[in-house]
Length: 318
Image (tube, rainbow, N blue to C red; front, side):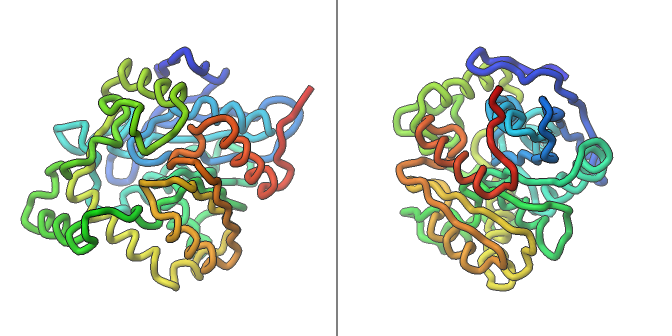
C-alpha cells in the first residue's frame, strides 16, 4: 500500500495495509498498526469524517500507539483510496448511510476481530462518530467505550431554512438528480479552499499538511456531496434525534464538541449526551470542527478528556 508522507508528520512505522471488499462489492482501503512498547490496552478504531483519508491521521495514530493501543482505520466508500461510486470522483456520494454501516461491519469482521486484540474502543470524528453510534445500538458491535469528536448528530445552524435543506435534496433525489453536486459546499474541500476563513481548524500548519496530501494524491480528494448523500444524511440525522436512538446505545460514550463549530450542531450533541444511557459531554471552547487537527493547546484538552474516559490511557514516557 502506497502512503504519502507529507513531510509534516511521518508515516507511523510498521503499518499493515491493504484492501477488503464489502458484501456489495465495494473495495475499501484499510491500515492498522500494532501497539508499541510494553503496554497493551487493546485496539482503537479510528473512524474518519467525510472527505478524509488515512494519511490525515498519522499524527493521531502515533499518539494512540504511545498510549499503548493498536490502531485500525479505513477510508469509507467514496473517499480516500476506496472505491468511488460516481464517474466524477470528487462528489461524495452514497444513497443510504446503511452503506457506511456495511463498510464498518466488513472492516470489523475481516480485519479487526481476526487480527487485533480486544478490548475495542472507538475514536470517531464527525461522520465517523455518527457511524459509530449507529453501530453501537443494541450491542451490534463489541465496542467497550467510544470517544467521539464533534459527531454528526445534526448540522450547524445555517442561513438556509431547514425546510429547503431537507426538501430540495429529497425532491432532487426522487426526480433522479441525486448524483448532482450540492451547490455552495466546496468550502469543506481544503485542496481548493484557502486557510483564511475555513470552518475546520485554526491551526495553519495542520491545515496545510492535509492540503499537501490532497495535492500529491488528488485521487484521494472529494469536494461537495451529492444531493443523494445529503438526503441520506438528513434521514440519518432525523433518526438520531429521536429519543429512542439515545436509549438504544448501550456503550459508554464521551461526546466532545467544538465551541466554535460551524459544521455540526453543538447543541444537538449536548442533547444526545443527555439522552444516552451512559453519556459524558465536554465542550472545548474556541475549537473549530476538526478537534484533532486543531492548535496544540486545544488538542491537549481533547487528549486530557480522552485519557480520563478510557481506562489506563496515558502517554507512555521512558
